[in-house]
Amino acid sequence: MILALTLLFSLLSSRSTDRQTLFLWLGVLTITGFVRLGHNATEIKPETVDSSSVKSWVGKYILLTTFMSSLWGAAGIFLFTQVPVVQTTLLILLVAILISTIPLLLASKAAFFAQFISILAPLTFSIGINFTHTQYLMLSISLIALAITIIFASNYLNQVIIQLQETQQALQTQADTDQITQLANRRAFDGAFKKEWRRSTREQRPLSLLIIDVDDFKLYNDTFGHVAGDRCLKKIARAIQENAKRPGDIAARVGGEEFAILLPDAQSDGAMTVAKRLQTSVNRLDIKHPTKTNQHLTVSIGISSCLPLQQNTDSKQDIVYPAMLMKSADDAMYQAKRNGKDTIVIGKCGVHSAPIPLHKDSSESPPAPVLT
Image (cartoon, helix red, strand yellow):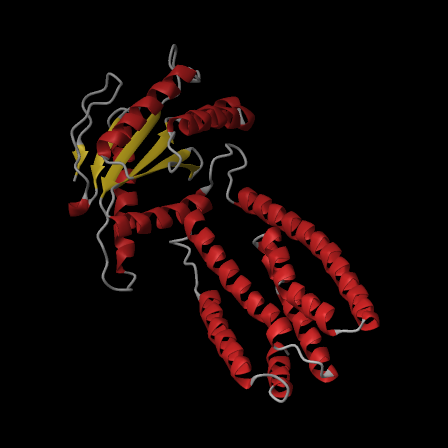
């Protein structure tokens, strides 16, 4: 519709305005329109999405939209004529353009009102210069009524959009959160794992993974019941959250009594530090074991670290590498179980591993072997 009105306006204006100015305006408008169309078609890939990329995309969208709005507003001065049909077409066109900018409320309410002013202010100025007092009064009243209507409508729409965004965010958070421990659930962890793997691949930074399993939890749960078992998981989850301290660290419950911590930009020595702190924290909880005197629940921890390979093709062959990291950490955790539990084992993730120094865990168990 807007395109049809633009062509009609250009055709009508060509008889009563400077054609060079009209063609220049139309040419710049068309080029800007195609640039914005290309920008709108630019997809923000899930693996690269972050706050900076979203802000950059929104900033360019607002800039391009503001420039286009200024071009439309300029038509109210440079292409304004005394021909009634041209005036009517221009007014309808500018109102349609103004309504089409309402999606800007998603990005910024201030940006929307900037478009509002840049579109209507030039036309109002032209009306004040060229129209008679009666015509100016009538159109001014109409424009003021339009402005008030759009302002009230935009305020309401902005509130609705904010509420919808908050509701959507709350539902998304609920869908990604384990209801017992309030950590990320397996679904959220898998998404974060893929995202961080791709980021580590692009930036060639190491990535570490801890798999944590509560020792003899089934026996605890069977003895004391599910309510006590849930309380136990909540305490351990808090200890895990407290030790995944960096903003980029991701802690999740990935199974019944199994947890994971993803440590971006961390090698095995840093992961071992986190594992030792966590082991100490869980031991200090002193959650009594149901069958052993003077014993408490413990955790077995498997660690794996690697440096992802940079892929040169769009194939899905790189999926083997995150699977290697996951399997290596999982195998290390089971090895920790076999080593007597309450231990930490570092697993080697193929030939692309980050440097892995040998460590002893913080318990009195024998030194943990390094898996190959």
